[in-house]
Image (cartoon, rainbow, N blue to C red; front, side):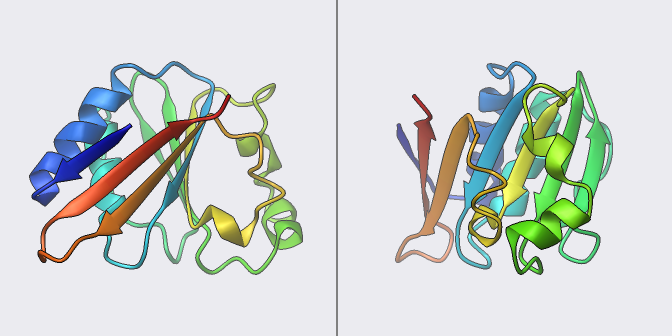
Length: 142
């Protein structure tokens, strides 16, 4: 599935609508370059899950938790160097359907590919020529 977003607001609206269709446990990989709109996507998703917390990028904290209909675990693995490092930080349970009690959204999943291989949905956000336009690609894992 593909969606062309013309603004941050449209990206957030797309994510909000997607959130209403998702059931826990669920692991979502969120890919895209710096500034592609990954955090805006998570803001919209959190709104769709009725989370009231202020959504911010967890670049330095690595994980933020937002309480909505179910917990949303928002990861930014940008500063993680390996699967082992992520596992040492205790993230394994958030990427395992048997122990996950909510939804994990993982930015920069390529930095811990073995740890997050059991995902449900992969979303890629690509910048287009227009400063605000993005192509959002959603792929469900078979």
